[in-house]
Image 1 (spheres, rainbow, N blue to C red):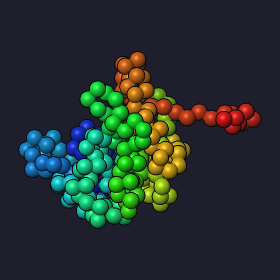
Image 2: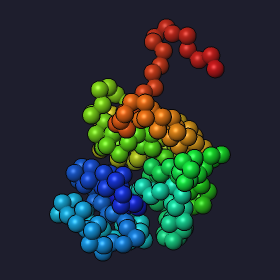
Image 3: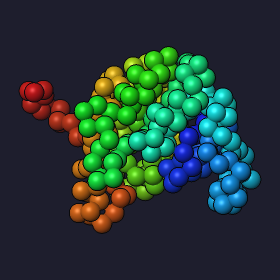
Image 4: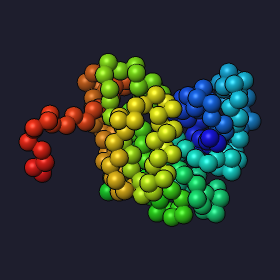
Amino acid sequence: MRIGILGTGNVGQALASAWVRAGHDVVLGSRRPDDPELLSQLKELTASGLRVDGAAGAAAHAEVLVNATPGTASVALLRTIGAEALADRIILDVGVGFLEDGSLSHPGVSLGEEIQQAFPDTRVVKTLCTVDRKVMIAPDSLEGPATVFLSGEDPEAKMVVRGLVGDLGWADDALLDLGGIATARGQEHFAPLFIGIAVATGTYEFGIRVVLPTAGGSGSDH
């Protein structure tokens, strides 16, 4: 599959490396695609087939465009690409926005919703924002199975994203579909708890797991 990734930080590079290894055609979009330091960091990946381009070039290449940019800048960057260029694309959004004081930049809604509202002809699927970049691409590094989540309006887009997340090593039953894009709020608003757990345990490399009642349990009483 043709994948474009916006964001050349740790998350973008981790996802790029994993999907290149899985055999996908990946372009990493950067504001400075000719930056010598960036190209030096990506030397092994580019030797394996990764290409580096500007944001518009990554979007033009992509069947699935991954947003791995800081959440406070994501919509503005996508606007530079343009709604027409993003129409009918799938955007796999892993971003979470933080303000300088550490609070969420989308406290009442979510970045995923904001992207969907700004680009109504684009199919946005939120996922993977409840785990660290290392766990994103190596779920087997945990002592037990974890759960990651899908939020989005388009069932076909979710199936495509489910496959790409599977290519990172996640079992299909580890992916829980929460429903429409409004449920991205729950994923993003987990971030403060994620940070609290990281401080308490001394590591960012952990996952959360949804555990259901045993057979014959009490069932739903919410």
